[in-house]
Length: 313
Ligand code: ATP
Image (cartoon, rainbow, N blue to C red; front, side, top):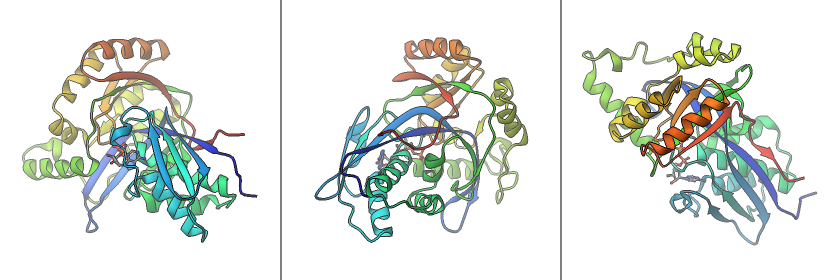
C-alpha cells in the first residue's frame, strides 16, 4: 500500500580516496578509476504526498540549490514516477548538511535519497538493479550514494564494484565558502594537461585510456591501515581545483601542519579531506583547522558510512 505519511531517507557524502582521470572520451566524459568512500556527513530527504511536485531545502548553502526541475532530487522523483507510469506528486524536502558544490556529491546524495524515499512512499518496490540503473541515468556519482560503504567506480564512475574495508577511518573535512563547478574543474584539468604535455611529468597521462585503481590503496582499505591509506591518497583533479581556487593550497598546508596523516582536495573541491590517526587526533585537527582562517568550518567524521537508508519507521 502506498504510504500517506512522510518518508525520510538519510544519505551520506563521499570522498574520493583515489580519483584517476583518463583522457576525454568522444562523449565528453573522462574515463575514471574512482575509489569512493562514504563519509558520515548526511543530507536528509523527506517526501510527503502533495498535489504536485515541489522542492524545499534548508541548511548551509541551501540558497545555492535550485528548487525547480533542475534539482537532482526532483529529477529523481520524476524519473521514478515515469518508470512506474505515475505522477510525481510529492513534496521533496532536503535538509542539507553536505556542502553544496563542495566535491562531496551532495546533489547526487539527494537524488539517491529521493529515489529511495519515493519508492518507499509509493510502495513501487523497484528492484535494486533497476534503482541502480535509474541512479546512473541521473548522474555518475548517484549509484554510489545509494550503496555507500566503499566502491571502485569505473567508466565515468557509475560502474561500481564494492570494496572491502576493515575498521573505521577518521577524517576531518575543511569546508569552504562557495563551491566549485565540477565541469569547470574537469575543463581546467584538461587545460593544465594540454599546457604541460611533454614538459611536466606531474600532468602526464601514463595510460590516458585506462586509469587503474592503485593496488596499494586497495590493500590499505582492506587492512584498515590509516598510514598506508595516507601514503596512497591521490586526486588527479587537485591541481585543477587549486588552480581555480589558489587559497586551497593554504587549507592543505594548514591541515598538514595541524597533524593530519595526509590531505587532499575532495573530488572536484573545494572541500578538503584530511586523514587522522584516530578520533582524538581528528577532533584536534578540526579545532586547529577551524581556527586557522583557511576554511569556513572543519568537521571531524568517519568512514565508511552506510548508503541511503530509510529512517522513518
Ligand atoms: P560532485 O562531488 O558530485 O561533483 P558537488 O558535491 O561538487 O558534486 P553538488 O552539491 O552536487 O556538487 O552541486 C552541484 C550543482 O548541482 C549545484 O551548484 C547546484 O546548482 C546543482 N544541484 C541540483 N540539485 C541539487 C541538490 N539537490 N543539492 C545541491 N545541488 C544541486
